[in-house]
Length: 94
Picture 1 (cartoon, rainbow, N blue to C red):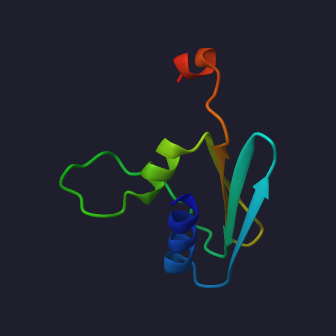
Picture 2 (tube, rainbow, N blue to C red):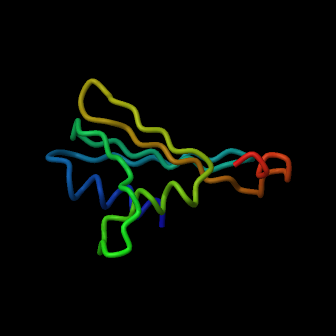
């Protein structure tokens, strides 16, 4: 779902090419999507009447971290998906 949301947004809104990488280590999977659109995405405020455009909110809710960085051309969006649940003490601070 994270890959689908990030790649769909990049293809839908970026005027040029899109690149996607998956990086896997013992603790997490990083989904990294680069596109040529310089506009930085932002999650919208909650709106029960809004139909669609909830993708970034959902990605933020199901990932451990979400990084959005401007690049010389376009931007890079990286979402980290934990491969195991964090220790209880870490979840208490969220």
